[in-house]
Image 1 (spheres, one colour):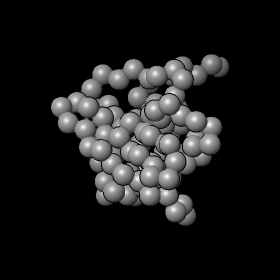
Image 2 (tube, one colour):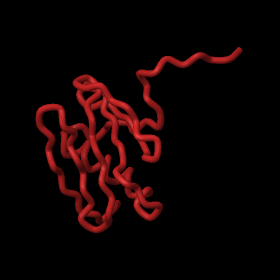
Image 3 (cartoon, one colour):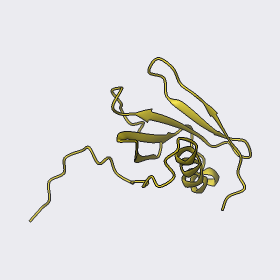
Length: 102
């Protein structure tokens, strides 16, 4: 288990929540895709999960290589904080239709 300490800036009026690591430079924006139109930043990492039926995207802010591994711990912390510790972290947007080549 990580000994990281995280802080949360809660968003309002369509602004994302932001998770801050107190020990590193890691910052993650948290968007609820049920409430906003979202466009992924191409140079950032995006991970997904459902909290209480709402699809969430977790997107890094100015990610540094040293902080990338802490992203999972920060998302787990957020899910637990939101009362949904069993949230599955997904690497791809599950709402995007995909064609399967035969």
